[in-house]
Amino acid sequence: MERQFPGGKRLRLVLGDITRIPADAIVNAANSHLCGGGGVDGAIHRAGGPSLMRELDQIRARSGGCPTGGAVATSAGNLPARFVFHAVGPVYRDGGRREADLLAACHRTCLQMAEERDLRVVTFPAISTGVYGYPVAQAAPIALAAARAHLEREDTRVREIVFVLFDQCTFDAFARAL
Ligand code: ADP
Image (cartoon, rainbow, N blue to C red):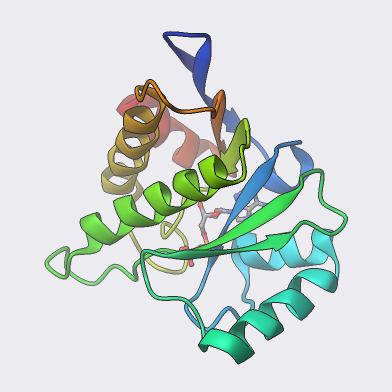
């Protein structure tokens, strides 16, 4: 499923495993300690290999971690990409703790990091909707609005933003929101 934007830019939804889809940058749903976890983070580290964690160890030693709403970049090891952007989405509690702002912010941060590196294709998982508990029906329109706002910018060099959704239920929620 996809949506076209002026200049041939595209927003796409794909059902699948984000570690298998070529991109310039693959976004990971990390945690603020950058210390690895299950879910998509575990899959990305398994497929990417140990160099990702070695780079994150150095970033952690320098800066202690990454705030919620932010992201840090590493190389992509064995993944079919140049970079992994380890984004820290919010843990969902009750919706009254700026969760929506923080979820939008981590998407914007990653897209800005793509601009800074002059990248064309960026893939995202459904950040925060797994262990972090964000209801996917609420998260999907926030993630898509951030992607859309970026693609509507005239100065963007990003050509394609792909949300790679791991299960049908998540895909359907994104498809409805799109
Ligand atoms: P968070 O802690 O941000 O909630 P999770 O990894 O628990 O992160 O879940 C985020 C989303 O990533 C969930 O929809 C989960 O099903 C999905 N996911 C898990 N593995 C993969 C994968 N290999 N590719 C794409 N999405 C994945």
